[in-house]
Amino acid sequence: MSLDSKLASLASVPQKDKGAAYCDVLKQLVSASPPSADDIGQLVRYVVSQDHVGLVVARQVLGELVKALDEDPLKPNDELQKSVILSTLESIQRSVSFQEQATALRLKLADIYEAEEEWSDAAKTLMGLNFDSGRLAEDEQKLNIYIRIVRLLLEDEDSVQAETYQNRAGLLIHSTSNRELQLSYKLCQARINDYTRKFVEAAMRYHELSWVAEIDDEERLQMLSAAVTCAVLAPAGPNRSRLLASLCRDERTAQLSNYTILSKMFLEHILRPSEVKGFEESLKPHQLAKIAQSSNDRVAAVDDEQQQPGDEPVSKRTGPSTVLDRAVMEHNLLSCSKIYNNITFSGLGTLLDLAPAAAETMARRMIEQGRLRASIDQVERLITFESRDDEEAQGKAGGLGDVNLETEDTGAPFTKKWDRQIRRTAANVEEIVQALHEKGLAGNAVAMTA
Image 1 (tube, rainbow, N blue to C red):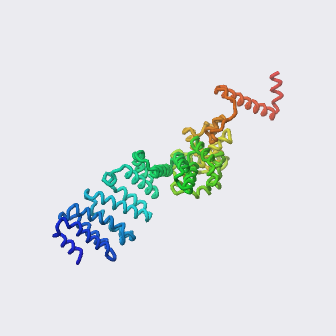
Image 2: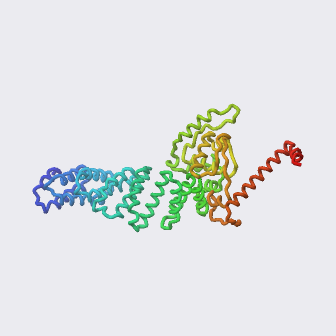
Image 3: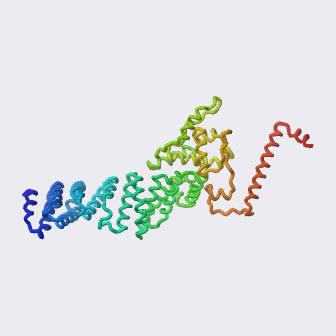
C-alpha cells in the first residue's frame, strides 16, 4: 500500500486513535530499508496541514520524529537527518503552534553542522531559534545558546555578529553561577577583543584565564601564548609596557616559542626584520590583516618626492601595512626614544623603513595619544625626546613597576626640575668650552675676561 493510501485510510479513524495510528506510520517509514526522507517529509506536511488530524496529534507525531532522530537507523546517517530536519522545519516554520518541536529540531541540526565543522550554518540555525519559547524560557538556557553562537561565529571569523550576541550574553551572565558558562563567556570576550584589535584588553583577559585551575594545563598554556601574542601586537605605550612587565614576571612564558620577542620588547630593544619574521609565521589570519593608510601617510609620500639631490636615499613606504608592522614600528620608535636625545625625520625614517614625513606622522600620532613624550620641530625636521625620572620610567615605561628605588624623596618636584636644568646648563657650557678649545679660542676668551 502506498503512503497516500495509508494516509487516506487514516482519515476515518476515530480522533482518540489517530495519534497512535500516525505514529505507527512514522515508525514504519523510519524502519524502512533505506528510510526515505521524502516519505517522512510527506507525512509531516500531511499531519501539519490537514485540519482533521488536529493540533494535538500533529505535535505527537513531531515529538516522535524528534525521538527517532536519536535512534537507529536515522542516527548514524547525518545526511538523511539533515534532509528530514530541513524538510520538517520548512513545513512548520510558519506556525507558532510547534515552537517547542522546532526548537528541538534546530538544536539537533546545529549539532550536526557543528560536527561537520560547518560553523556558519550551525550559527545561523541557532539564530533562528525563538528565544521566547517555553523550551528556552530560563535565562541560563538562553545564555548557553548565545555563547554557543558566539563561539561558532568566531570559528568562522565573523567577529561583527559575534560581538552582537556577546553583548546579549553580557546581559544574562550575572544570572548564572555555572562556572563553565562564566569561563566560556570570558574566553569569547577575549577572542572578540583579539579579532577587533583591542589587543591590550584581549591580552589581559587571556592572561587572567591562563591562571584558572579548572582549565586543562595545555589549554592554559595556549591562552598564555595568546596573551603574549596580543601583547606584542598591542599599541606601544604605557599600557602595553605594564602588560609586558606582567607577562615577563610570569615564569611560564619562558617555555613559549614567542618568548624571545616578548623579552626584547620588554627590555625595549630595537627589533630587526629577521627577528620579527619567525613571530609573524605564528600569527592567525586576522592578526595579519592589512590596515588602511591614513591620508596623512599618503601625503607623506608626495612630500618626500621633493627630496634634494644631495640627500641620502630614503624609503618610499608611507606607513605600516599590517597590524604587526605597525606594532613593531611603534615599538622601535619608543625604543629609539630611550637611546637618542633627538633624531631627524630622515634618521627615524631609515630606522623604521618609512618615508621621513611618514615617520613624523607616526611620532606625532603617538605624542597626541600620550604614548610618546617628545616634541617636534618641523622647521629643523627634528624630533626631541623628553627625559624622564627613573622612578617614572619604572612605573610607566615597561619596568617592573613594583621595584622600590632607594632614593631620597624630598617631596619637592620643582627642586628636582631645577636640578635637571642645572645639569643641562652645565653640560651645555662644557660643550661650548670644548668647542672653543678645538678652535683655539679658549685663550682669547680668558684674556678678554681678565
